Length: 145
Image (cartoon, rainbow, N blue to C red; front, side):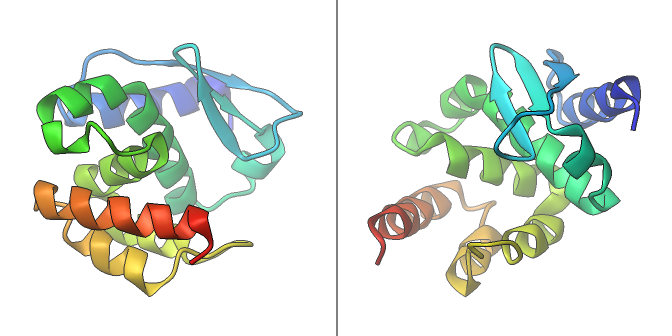
């Protein structure tokens, strides 16, 4: 997929939710993951991204946009101030209407997130409850519980 087309998807996802700043998008071949956000730029591993389903592409791009908008999200949702960047980015994916796609994406791969993540994701609109439950879930996950 040409980088301009990817950028247009990013721009559309941003505008639909009232955000009017857009990160740059670049393909990088030697990334460990399919995508990474740094210095106002979404970096994508071209071959893996291009071979992903359309739903997975949207989830990946929306997740990276969540990183881009993290400080805005924390300002709008003070209960998110202590949450890790990854869970805030996933909340953003659910928030913009890609909840089911996110749940499918996180249920696949080497380390599936599991049913508890899906249950918490279902409550993404109750921000305080989501923040509390996802914070606990995330600490248990990285702690190996």
